[in-house]
Structures are given as structure tokens and as C-alpha cells.
Length: 266
Image (tube, rainbow, N blue to C red; front, side, top):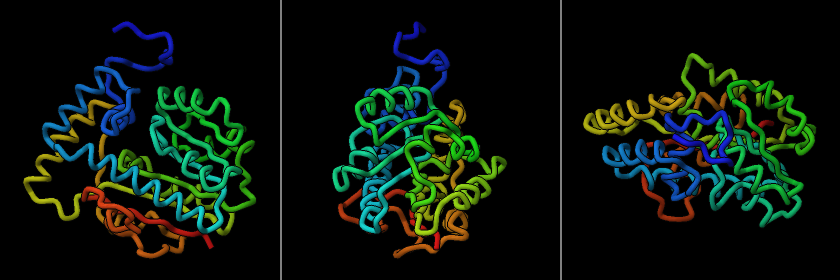
């Protein structure tokens, strides 16, 4: 397949990307034929995938607004994905024009579009980095130029940790980020789960995961207890690690089998 001039040379147009599939589910346009084909295959098995993507996006909005209400004015969004309506900097800077945001994603298309989107925004930036390598993120010059780690930060990991297998030690990565944050910082996480899913649903889920194994980000669904363990060392705020649609709801989002929570470093 011919590569368009704006597409980073590292992008493999013959392999679907979980980030670009997510963009498709959200109704975005930063995806390719291979991504749309894979996403449509997922939708045939699980027609609620677009609703699930929107529900995660809704949680992101609620979490950012909650953190703003707690005085947070700088954010690090890990696995941020491809820019679409309701980005963190849009939500945050609408309330606080001085809010600072750094997006980090391993997907080159996500970073390319984020960089273009933020070209005229001196308080927001995007870097290409893998959240599984915390030191590469925390030591990045651009991250340090935008964010002040001596002050509280809102760390966001929304709909991304279920793409990190156990052998990549997600808990250890989260602990490293937590250590780097100043007291008063917050960590927000949402994560897909098998909890409450019927046997028929699990069988469909395995078919969906077979599609994601074609990407570089196979799905790893975890239990509520496993998701709660990611908040070790943090003071979890009300309503705790809860079903995603029940975390401080402000609209009638679609129910999805996922958990969400926000923890504070004290």
C-alpha cells in the first residue's frame, strides 16, 4: 500500500493499530483501511464497541474535571491516542487557560497528529514514548519543560493498561510513575474487565482478542481486584474503583464491563 506523505515512515499500513482502531470507534478520521477492516470485524462480534469507546472518553472528561476541582493544573496523559473531540488540553484549558498537558503515546500517527494540533499551544505537547518504560517518559526533556514534577500532576491512564500484558509488569511501571509524582498528585485509570461477562460474552471476547492480536497491542482483561491493585500506595477517592459507568456519572453512558478509579498520592 502506498504511504501518504504525512504518514510517519515507521507506520506499517499492512498491520492494524489498536490506537487507530479506537479512533475509528470514536468516529475519527485518523485511521487507515487496515484499521477499519479490523474494527468492523470487532463490531460484528461486539456491536457495542463504539459505545464502549465513548464511555471511556466520557470517563476521561469526568476525571479531568474532578482533578481540576482539586486544584490540579498539569496533566500527563499516557497512551493518549489519536486527537479527537474532548482532548485533555481542551477540557482542562476551558476551565483553566493556564493548565499544562503532555500527551505520550507509542503510536506514531497519534503523536504526529497531536503535534500538529498543538502547534499553536505553548502549554501542551506530545511525545512518542512507551508507558511501559517510565524512565524514558519521566526523563524526556519535553515532558520536563512543560510539567513541574515538584508540584502535583494528574497522571491519566485511560483505556490503555488492558493493552499491557503481565509480563511487561504494568504494576511496576505504575509504581515508578507514582514515585516520581509530588504529594497531592492524582492517578486516573480505566480498564476493561471480564467481571460480569457471560460465558457467551467471554467467547465473543476471545474472538475480539484474536483480532487485537494482529495489532501490536493484544487485549488483557483483568478482574476488579486486579485493577484495584494498580492503586497500591494511593488513597482512592470516592466512589472507589467502580464500574466505569458508575464513577461520578454525569450522563447515561453505555454500560461496559470495565472499572475506573482515581487515587491520590498523599
